[in-house]
Image 1 (cartoon, rainbow, N blue to C red):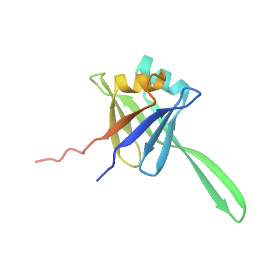
Image 2: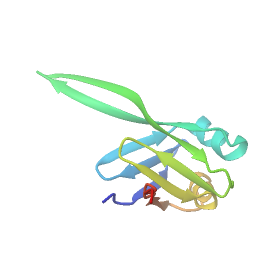
Image 3: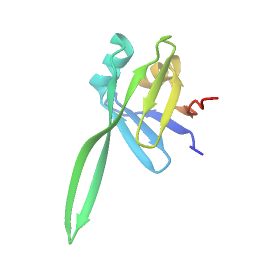
Image 4: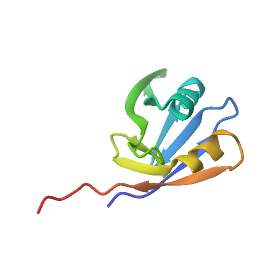
Length: 112
């Protein structure tokens, strides 16, 4: 079963998404584009590898966040799963009015 995640704001205006042991980011310009224009935003993850004293990092796109068709929530899709957050909660966190907000797991639909 998927555990819920948490959404928090960075000092630069981006968003951090904590889901289980993973930490994802949405860049500040992508947050603005998501909120004001409704454009999907890439969700990235930074991975650090240590090999024999050498530290190598890479940033990869691990999913995306998009406003749902009704326009009242944002759905975040990652390798870990899919999560939803009310748009108003995401806006409050992005504006710094709230320190964090919970993400709720989306349960895949099961055909009957």
